[in-house]
Image (cartoon, rainbow, N blue to C red; front, top):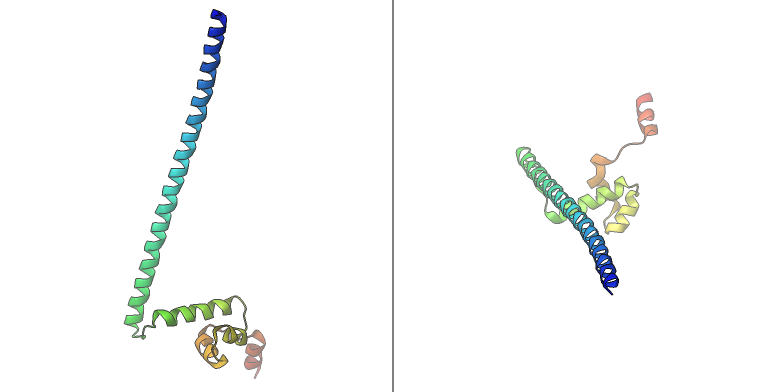
Length: 126
């Protein structure tokens, strides 16, 4: 009977030792996850600060150049138009997508539309 009791105590001790090791590993993983989460949040805060600074710089430059500032709605439409153009959409496709005329889209995107090399060559050869 005494042998069984010692064996039972030994088995319980081994189980508790294994449980202790596993719980320490889990707590180490939790700490690593918390550290990762904190570093990501710090990076997000830093990026938000940079975005705010860029927006303020843009506003200052616009004021110094005396460019009339656009409304948030106008800026969003312009960003969407420019994004679609940079992704390779045609002016007609962009106009259909946004419900604008091709002339309006062309007028807004004129500074960003690159002329094709053939046109440049033809102009230079003349």
